[in-house]
Amino acid sequence: MNQSRLRAAAIVSFAITAMAIQALFGVVYAADKRMYYWSGHQRVITSANNTPGKIKSSEAALLKLIKKTDEAGRRVAPGLLAEYGYFFFERGEFDTAIYWFEREIGEWPESAVLMKKMIERAREGLNS
Image (tube, rainbow, N blue to C red; front, side):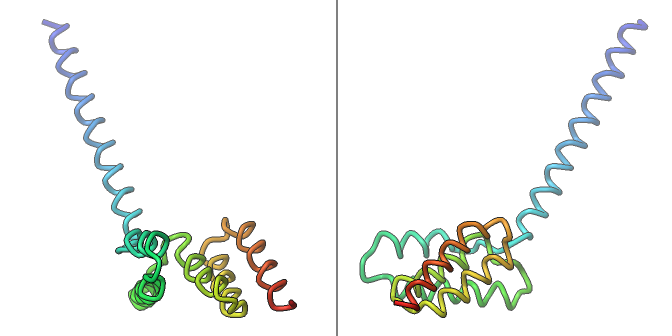
């Protein structure tokens, strides 16, 4: 009888621990979803990279996404500002590209190594 009580207590303890862990992961996941705004970015980037002639519409869609995110007071997802800047880089609009690369660094400091390299290349383009 004592063993059955211990077993029941262990089961209850395990269940409570499992529910607490599940609740914790739920909170972390919910917080992560609010951390920055991803809405539709994959479709926009895929369209731009895989469909010649869709670059202008993809660029406009990405700018719309960035503006929508800014207006909502949320962080733009990692890489989207850099991706938008790259549209300008490819067209030789290096000043504008540098602006977006620098903004990417401001939002996502961990991107600094790559973005500084892109800024360096853009400055080389300005000087040529």
